[in-house]
Image (cartoon, rainbow, N blue to C red):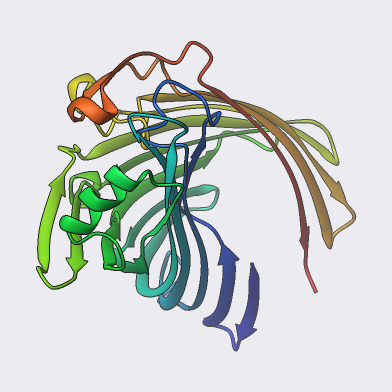
Length: 315
């Protein structure tokens, strides 16, 4: 992130960050390999912004940027006899998204902010790569028009709204909180197209629900240059147990964080934080025909450990 002053009231900023990403990878011989072996949906956003200070207590800002994305998927194919075949799909795309925000500071040390991020439409196209097919399976897929056909998958990064509060209780203590909404129901509508002699488009409805985000945190300055931070956050599940799939085994999440901030002089601030994310059991009971079978179970250790190191320098 970079911010540059343009006079007394204007600020120019630019960010390079990934605000959205999903990824999963299973062992090649796992029981659900005919559903998925590997899937990744990664993004990197470049967003220039402008901010304007309307008066002493109100500021507004906004920007439009590019979202660079990559999607790949790999699954085994049941040949019925012998070893498995494999299906691979991979492509990249660039989408456009925007953000607008408003920050109010009714009194020094108390701030309220609201930010809206627009949805971003992405489309991935690739001629599906089939390997290791048995003759019978090759004939079946050729008859269905899948061999040599272009597959198109459309995805929408959810639009979001987040409301934030920051309040300094005194010189040593500060508290903060967020309430957010994400449009996951739009993300769950995924059109899949096959371009061949018998072109077809099917919208895969994953029955996703919109999600809510809640967070509380605090800073405590225990020595002049040192602050300790702590916080907790909760996100509701975007999908119910009966609709959950192995490629997006998403459940409700809880985050527990703690960290340290050190003011190294007036220009440089260093930070370190650790977050433990509990992603829930994410139970699954999914059926996809006789070749893929039924997969049923849950994730016994669905956790993520996040370590963050930051530096903030004022020119």
